[in-house]
Length: 320
Ligand code: AMP
Ligand code: MG
Image (cartoon, rainbow, N blue to C red; front, top):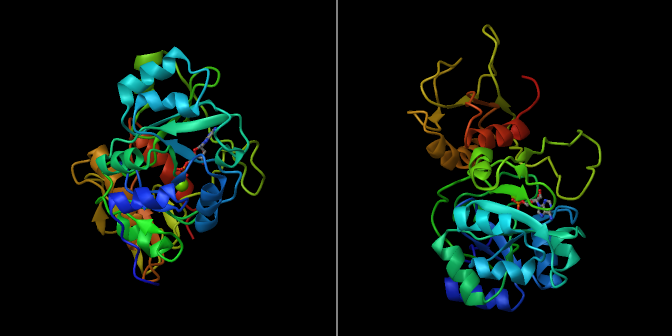
């Protein structure tokens, strides 16, 4: 691997204006950013990640007023949500403007938009003067990066720059709410359905629609992310089950487990701390030294819903 292309904010802005792709920090996970108006830059994002073009990208802005540059027919509910949760870990799906290329939205008539709170992300968006399409800065189907080192390990040879903004404070991808039709949560995250409901009234929650081994019904429903190479099991291990010799355990709170905790998401059972730690632990423990990663059960409330969602996707269905 070559030396990672560490980049300053102003160099990153120049590279983005020149149609290059650059990894940038956000409060959720690191993003691989490119000019959302430029199909060639978008193509570079898909190529670097080996991401299929049926999986659409989120467009990042740095001011609520910029929403009108990328979306149209914006309902009042979108502005109320923006006032409540932006800048922050919320993505809204809205009808797209023609200036957003089909490649960005996988030919959907809608666009995903987010205004991140990370000051470095905001500085890069502002200095480039562009809306930035940015999926997570990892190879397709790999764990999302929550540090610049995670990005470098996967993408250093493939991208023009990496801006180091420290570890991500949220640590899990944004909550996605569609406002095309009745408000519907498409992906759980740090903004919970209850928080959405407090602003726009009742929200629907879309259940995962993927059927293993089958094509998805529509773009934007890709459901096979987040699988570490070492089998990860999320669930309760039956007593008497013989674990492989090199098993490690990611604990949560003070639960008893079949083996001592290797690392703890949060010793006090704090869900926010646990979320910020999860992907880093998945990166660290995903080495050939281990045969199995166990993860303790986590309450399915608040941001715990996002943790359960990601861990269920990462988990093998049955113990080996
Ligand atoms: P990420 O890989 O974290 O950047 O997540 C991007 C995800 O946002 C996609 O995989 C889709 O699930 C979702 N998404 C983006 N654009 C749309 C859209 N127009 N409609 C529905 N979902 C979308
Ligand atoms: Mg991703």
